[in-house]
Image (cartoon, rainbow, N blue to C red; front, side, top):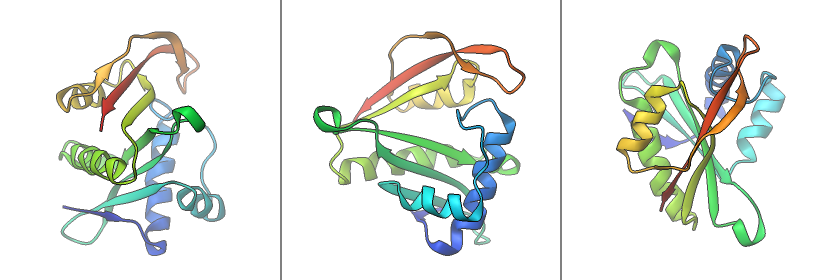
Length: 160
């Protein structure tokens, strides 16, 4: 598995993976799908985007990294991760998170904060906690699931 900065040639695969997670409706807050135009712009606007490339050269996952806030809180970054559904369970997410932590540090951020990890997303929560992320509590009914019911969200942070 190779984690590397994305290139323009990766954007179609990145859009497909991102939209798959949006369609599932259980992890990302976005409801609108990326198009070739909006996707290219979205990924270009991030502080860093990276992809996970398997040994066959396929893009199987990605992350985006960007400031969580501005000014006096501009040292805090935020990230999102997505892995192709048919490639989950292979520790791709872990490699993406570890690279993201290192890259965030390289970019001058000192804290990585996740604002809205859905409480029922146990795989992500266990991964984050195993990697040293600190849970900040629970925001009751902070995430509207695709089927319309609300679930709690759990913010996390990690010092870089």
